[in-house]
Image (cartoon, rainbow, N blue to C red; front, side):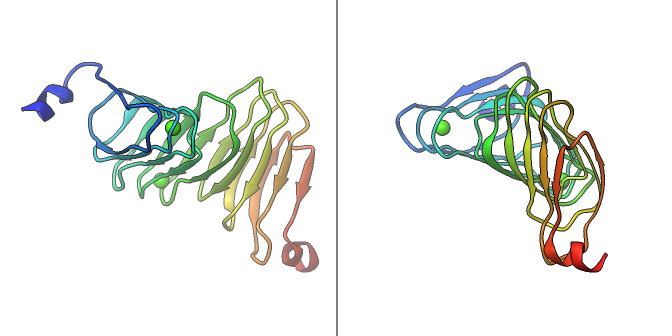
Length: 182
Ligand SMILES: [Ca+2]
Ligand SMILES: [Ca+2]
């Protein structure tokens, strides 16, 4: 019965701060973490949920097989599923690792700050007005990347053949094999 109660309305889950939490959550529209290392696994489709896991080294895993949409702040590792995942960062990213797996995924960085992101398996990446540093940790096959204003840097994975459509990036560092043979 608790589960059916959470299924409706705009539900909020607040985790205890100062400890390391591990939670499997479904149908919660707003989830707030604390100062510890929080591990959050979503077991239902996310449609516009707001997730802020605070300080610490936090991990968010989205449900696979569905199309998710989340607004995320202060999560150091984000893992998507096989569906089309849409992730909007609502806080500055400082070295976050984001792998959205299969599907036609979109990542939007917060504007007005300098972001640093390690991205994998994301088909569309949009930067903001700050200076964004983007490192691709998997092969890019037709990804679209627009880092907006600022002095932006894109680093492609080395040792593979990458294909990217790039706009508004001031510095592009290609993998050694790509630059040597393509
Ligand atoms: Ca935390
Ligand atoms: Ca995905």
